[in-house]
Amino acid sequence: MSSDENGYKFFRKGDMIVYAVALLFVAAFTLLAFLYPKEQGNRFSVYYHDQKIFSASLENDANYLFYVTETGGTVVPFLNRLPDTEYNVISVREGSVCVSEANCPDGTCVAMGRKTWGEIICLPHGYLRIVVEGDGLESDV
Image (cartoon, rainbow, N blue to C red):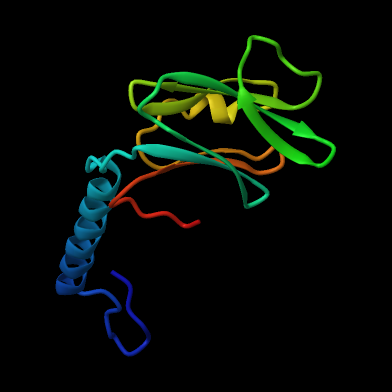
């Protein structure tokens, strides 16, 4: 333990116990926040530069193609043809959504996996966000 020139100890045994208990509480609540199952959404919306450009249900399995145009971003049903521009293939299966394919340089959006709540983000493609929405779900949008 450290002390100053007057012999006062900066940390006493009781202080260390209080800090340890506080750290345990912070760790426990952090784990609960990430591991506690969230309510599932029933639809998703696609945002491009914070503008909502598309919304669909998670109840129907489908594939959609997001691609960048000269005037912004567009989402259309995916017909197995990929454009010559930046794109993300959005896949809806069994009540979840994911980016199954993308030509962005880092592939983080694909690695985020399937979501039944939360967001999928692709920063290289102009801040593309796929937000799962539904009754009882909170969103920052």
